[in-house]
Length: 386
Image (spheres, one colour):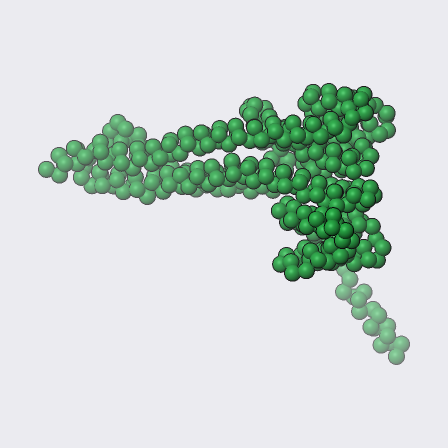
């Protein structure tokens, strides 16, 4: 019995590696594979519908748990149904509303902060409505930006593909036809064929390079910021559009939080999450720390530690001196929203013009590279045939 037990107990030790560091490697690999992923947050469109529905039911004197129950009933979005059910169960167990939202992992800290502000102030319906309005505005600008960039990008990609196909498939056939009748290319025809030879040799490298660049830009926020910073430094309209959009986003968030009872330093820190992965993120958190711990005025903290426009610091100073900070924040958010709309319109017009120019150039290149050699060499082909 003792011998069997000893053999059984010693079995795991026999399979353990002699070197102590070897066991940590597969264990660490398994741990990394089994590490739970962060839950995916809901889209802005889903959140707008959710907060609108909850806000309307709370205004009708329906309590929060029942509002969550009624909204989730029959909802086709199963992940949202599960999240709302979990929130309702936590609320029924006595957990605060904002903490129940946070526990799902599907709502940003900005949303949780505003829910907390509305709950503490007894104005949760107003907080939900404010969130719906804010997200609706962000969704509108997001759609405008995609419309201004994605559609032109697709058009340019299609025309570029047509140019490559013409140079790789059609022009070589024209060249072969001319060689078959003994016609020697000259002038523009020779240049066209040289361009075709270069395109045939380089198009795989070009396509792979473009795909690689797109993947790097899509996966790396640092690369996106570097490229965006370079474009902003060279193109004034882009700089005005991006700066106005970012400042509109975090100023509006600060106003929503502060007007619903969240202290100013926490409002600034929470609003920084709305511009994460931008230079404003660290700047806003630094300004909030200086304002809270060093006792400097808010306008001074923004002027010294952030890159906001001078208009922002000027109006914040007025708000501090006249005790009208909420009014000044509201005015700034509306002003930057109008500026962002105007810049977006100008940006869309500029992009449309650039796309038109590029499209004309690509269509012209396809026409010149494909049909011009035939037109120019036609007489020589007829003479050679005769």
